[in-house]
Length: 271
Length: 242
Image (spheres, rainbow over the protein chains, first blue to last red):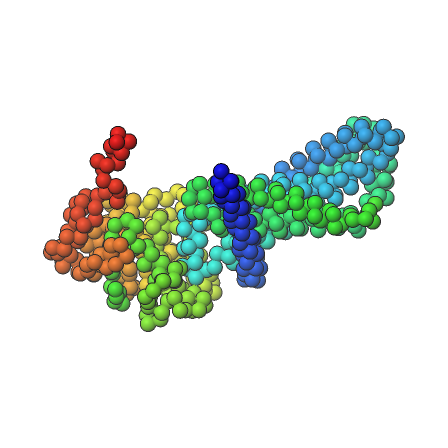
């Protein structure tokens, strides 16, 4: 009886150990992959039109969803914020609440999540399919390194697009907050903008938001190209790689957000 | 196994016997666990990455389903290796691409996208791309797979004609005996990772080797068994009856 129990625990431990070492190996693999991408960056930037094209695909084509979402998030924030602030007679502070929430948190995080599902999944699926149809192997046989020609431009396209998208998300959100707070509810426009100007600092509020969005952009882009490049070259392989990109990117964004927020605002030194 | 310069050599064998692996060894995409791969006197697995890329620049490969870049037009696909490896002016690249397309009979299809091509046309465009930089060696991975009889003949004749006109060395990995017997200079038969027979097309036609006969005649059973290895049929069927 107890021997069986011991054997069961031993097996469970073994499986746990296997999972952990597997995950660590995967992380190391991803780090080496990142190093290889960075190594090939200069030769990728020599053909800058490739990166510009990716910025168009991941950035410009994501504009509609980012701006629409930002607008709605800002409007909801304004409604909810007003309800709460009114109880304390602080409804004049609505502008500052909307702006801080967007610039510090919601802008980078929500646009990161949207970016992962809109652009990250597309990058993974595209690279995975290129691998499945032997396009990457063909490129290698033509003495062209896919890391420089395919992977690095997509990685940098994402890293560059993401902070811009987050900034536009926040801008659209603040505009949405203004529409609801000032135009619909009737808060004084001067108070709305004035409080916002007085209460939101470029350093640290805006810069921290920018740092976050750059980190999220790098994380999502790395996960997307890594999953695509290492996808099993079958239909199921590409499908599961695409799913993993969205899941891993979302988790990475939320976890990194917590860690960065803890570092940035520790001890209450900001606001 | 040796592949003489300027000849077309076919490597034949059933599916999954390691034919494509041979091409990947020659192209340096895989490293052999033992043995040697030499191209033009150079040992491929020992080459530094830059020397390997130098070698690949002088060789072309035709992939099983073409492996055309789906986000580029036919024209751009063929211009790709030229743009990557040469500093030729755009007008010259245009002329060269049109010449390559003319050679495979698809000059009229220059502006089509790969998704708009039939299987045979895609294979011909891939062939034009493989010869874009006038290589010394072309590796063909199953060039005949999945083609209708007309395209089959066209691709076969193209391989022969290009080989003779450009004095290329060609390695054709295939399981299509009938088509290859018409165009190649020499054949190797491979099974389970080793060469089991070889000869010129005439020798192969006259061969009495049981494996070669099964291959040429297309017999379902022979040295290559019809059945995948399995426990005895009777035992497995009646296993639960006891």
